[in-house]
Length: 193
Image 1 (cartoon, rainbow, N blue to C red):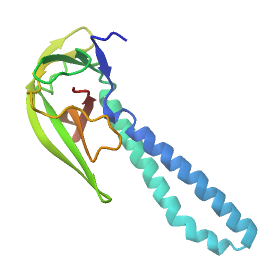
Image 2: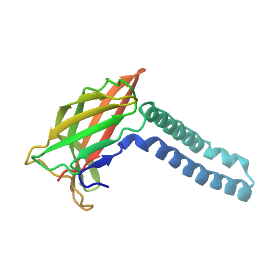
Image 3: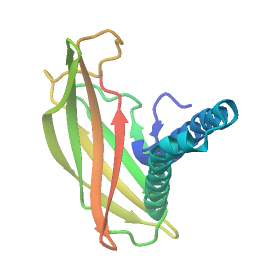
Image 4: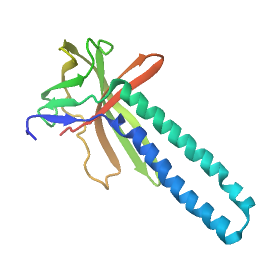
């Protein structure tokens, strides 16, 4: 990959699929236990104790399917940053490719710094800095590109890469719009140093 460009996929890309995978794993685990109960105890009544778990598994699968369909309404939306890492106090250019003709529902992006605090078992996420970014919409034959430029002021926190840090910081670019009475959101975590 070119050091000057960094292509980032949205956070929502795998959320529905991951929920469906978790539902499947729980289904297999509960089914094995159900078979063990039925064959060992020969008591079908105890099998009914597992029915609430099956209801939760079906619910997780349906929610995952809904999230997957919601993602597919807009499709993949890669974010490209130039340079590949945002430097504090320096301008960074970016573009988001949307594979839709004449897509003009997004005029602004939000740039946010999140702080994850974890101490004594409690964790909390807060936005500690945020701003809006204006986009320049560029229409091509079968796609729309949102071009933008932003500067993260000096003195802000860089992305934390340490696993054992008590306070972790990450930066994200996001947009949200409503289509067919559904809120569609895209979020990208960006590297800042």
